[in-house]
Length: 112
Image (cartoon, rainbow, N blue to C red; front, top):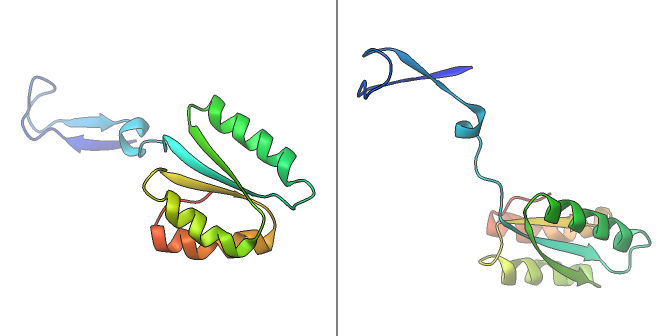
């Protein structure tokens, strides 16, 4: 457990005492809206995407789901959504992930 000095001594412990910091105070807020991109040509991509979307929604995250038939379209898809989402979830194989990476790096959005 970490402690934070209470510089003002404001109404809490005696001046100079340490105040515990909870995990919730250290953990950044969960993304509220995510771009869920799946390779529509993937054999198992659609069913996995359905399960991922359901899990995200149950966690309180709004999902903007997009199918992407061509890997070269991923960069533009991510760039267009950059101001509408807080994160990107990509479903597919190595080629799909590699195609998404330039968009992730350019936008700075977290990827899952």
